[in-house]
Amino acid sequence: MRRLIPISIVMLIALIATACAPAATPAPAPTAAATAAPTAAPKVTLTIFGAGTLAAPFKQVDNAFMKLYPNVTIQAQFGGSVKMVKQVTDLHQIADVVAVADYNVIPKYLFGANGKTAYTAWYAGFATNAITFVYTDKSKFASEITPQNWYQVLARPGVQIGRSNPDTDPSGYQTVQMLNLAEKYYNQPGLAASILANAPKTNMRDTETELIAALQSGQIDYLAIYLSDARQHGFKYLQLPPQIDLSDAKYSASYAQASVQTANGTLTASPIVYAVTIPNNAAHPDWALKYTQFLLGSEGQSAMKSSGFGSLAPAYVNDASKAPADLKALLTAWPK
View 1 (cartoon, one colour):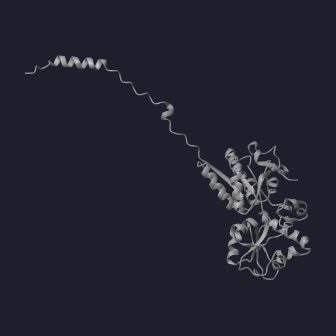
View 2: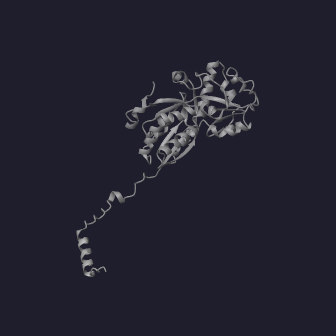
View 3: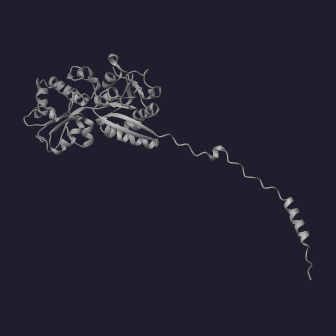
């Protein structure tokens, strides 16, 4: 028969075991770093004003930039370069980045001439282009026109030509400049006037891209436009000589022989170079600088090329001493 251990002895053994057991180490209190939630980059809305012809390449640039910086949302507006710049100077709208189809627009309106407010003191030329005429199979005399007889075909009765407004858009006055150069190149006095007679104000818009649908539908036969747009839309186009199409800086002195009168004064022809700047009153200057670096860099230049523009790498700068220091590795002096 087994003896029962008194309960008092059992309790004594339990107390001794508890006393001898190692003390449990308390869990460390969470540190501030462990409890703080990850800090997300602040949301930024970047506003860009651009020439109408930049809509396609900038869509590529903008999407790539926003993918790289998910906290950034880009709001872009496109239109005639003069019109877009005047939204800054006359309507006092805030833009982080301004990009135009004619570099001359920036010093003319944003450098503070004649005592007006100066919005910037620098610009960088980042792409080139050329003026041409596009057409479709529906266009009158489409089967007859060639790079040799184009100025005769465009002057024929009944031909409808579209163009942009010289008072609001660079391609508008560059088209007239090109026609004035063509008069001398082909030795055909009156060439410009005879072609412009088929391009009345009713066939004019603030930017030539607004007339693409009219060309496609057959409402107009030919459209004066940039070569980049011709390539983007797959239009037939005229391969004009570089001596007149404003595409080549080596003909700068020759181009300067042509000028056009506009509501904004007399405008002398020069090579087509697209330029970008950051206004002094940009809402997000640091992000505007990042965007401009991206545009002037390899990915931005690739987007320009794929959209039919000529690339400029490094970009031309009017005055390196006035450009942001972080851009200088991407810039070179403007050719004289």
